Length: 451
Length: 170
Image 1 (cartoon, each protein chain N blue to C red):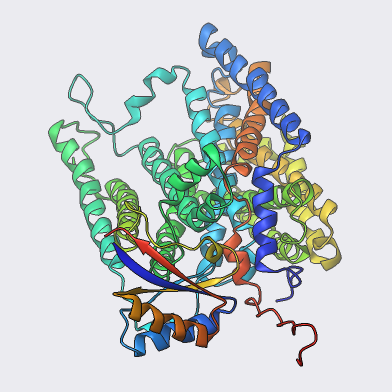
Image 2 (cartoon, chains in turn purple, cyan):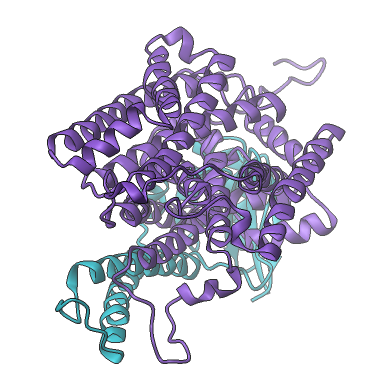
């Protein structure tokens, strides 16, 4: 497969990636300071306000008892999906184009999961009781209810965070060792600890290969189970428009779709601002564009099926929920979602579009706006139109909720910016694997002697 | 204290050839250090077997059993009948079983990796930093100076640019 890394040598990869860690310009500090400031101001301050004044500070009330916090939770869990999952699938299928981008994609998974877990704490209102969800008996000798999808969530997300953290760490050990050799002081100590004495011996490479492969095999079904379980939080209720068997595949496809769009955004930023233009190339954007196109078609199909089954059920409550979704109070949001997630990605049919960086960035952001809207509509429209008209109502997020949504994005950016200065964001050894092995340098003949 | 002859190569093929020759000459199995996993190591140094898959299987079994026992056992400890359903409800408990099966499978795979790769290193071992960048090293234990000289000549003949005399604690 042609890549733009063909002219590079092993030492160039080494130099470029380590430079991205040890050399930090003022732009980085400005970006980090801004992201951290916005996180404090828009996420932690409103959350503290909500903790002090109570959950009433959010706009959630009967019948809209689930709001943007849960929509954000599903969104961030969804965004986490493509990173590790895509990396595992591409690892098992020996796709070489994965190698330059998978580390950042996996980091995206990890930080999205962290932000998602934070939203559970924001949503419950009293996060100091979050340990009640853990499997241990309380003072009445009572255990959590393991029949509840909420407990499935705790187990699935806990396992996925653990698995994703381990997967990204295992893949980084050889690179930590490489950075260890080129750093001094506290950095050297940190990387010595992280690399655990890795030397790159044939035994170590062999064991890493097998362990990494087994982890990939275990994580793929895990990732599918996580978003299926998140969908059951809704589908196992008896609310019209939520109680559907299509929800598990619908959520999984939506998750991979938004996650892939998230990868495109992250790849653009890394290429542009971390100077990785030689590693993250048009080939990556082309392949991600094809993937987005396929996912958008599947997502559109499932959306059609969702509408069809609602109509075909013949139930008046389902018909009302459907009418409300398409033409009711939230209808502009629904059609915005269709425009961003079903129509706009058709542009990826053109290879010229797929290999254009800025249009792909705009499309990826549009898809994720559409996917956030989808999650909001799942929660918002369904609860607004339940069985009895006297239980109908409209949910509108409060300023506290809107601020926390913006702050969560800044929290994600902050975590990612810290990550790129600690972990090599491009896998050095895997990029080297895609290159030609070093050739011996031509021996220069001594002056005056025959060659 | 053990002594090692460590040859540094520019090309992976020369390093592999040197390792094969050293092994054939009766030296203890040489160790290759490289910036990337090398193809063809097993043809030269023999097939490698790893116990990681056993760790994975064992962890998955332990996790699966623990998951089901956790869900079913705690229902029996505090019986809470709901709507005439059985106390041990198989379909939801299989989900807990499945998640813990995967979790323990992952944790035991990592444990298996660290044990079989002999990591973390608790003592200093022979290491060549260039082998993390763009060179390939072959290291072989030498009992005495004569051994070292023999190893050095084999390494140089195979194309080593440098041969270093290194030691590591026993």
